[in-house]
Image (cartoon, rainbow over all chains, first blue to last red; front, side, top):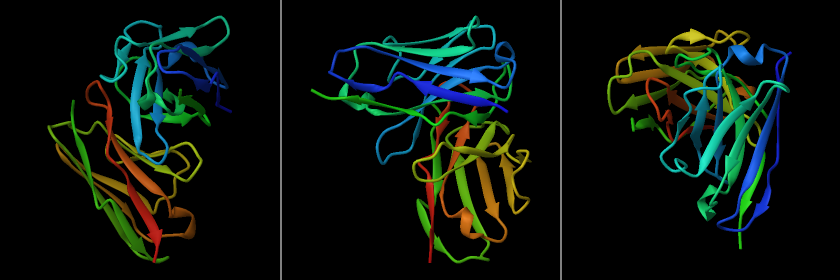
Length: 121
Length: 107
């Protein structure tokens, strides 16, 4: 069955960096687009980033553009999110999610359990 | 960015009730709309995609309709496990955007 397991969350100071990972299994990783979506404490869902099935053509939310980089490692079926220059309002649970499709726009059919990132001085 | 507006923000209902949640897009998104259910401390669960297609394994009491800018999620006969927060999401263009959520509570 499809499994997505995030890791890498933790506490970081403003201006710091963090790298999140999402280990994928149970499906052909190279065939599907992947997303990161976050949720601040007590708030709604915010889309963060997307990368196509082939690792090309990433897209980012306006609030993270230029600071976050999404990538995928096909050798060990892992999705990554490199987060730099972190701000207090980046504090959230970060979910990775599998798209229903490879490169065309589609909904997300599987989600990980999330990893908490706390930005605090 | 396309703005997604859900209404109501919350509602109280009883088991067995018919519940309707609406979602309005700030511009035409055709049928590029999904609905998710989220329970506290859990990841979202896909219910509906392409505005009206039921995701595999989702009970048939859930249905979606609409196209263009106006969409609806209907739960025909509310069950105890349906008390949760529901989000719409447009995937017509980037950045993808979610509605603010509708919390369905027990009356």
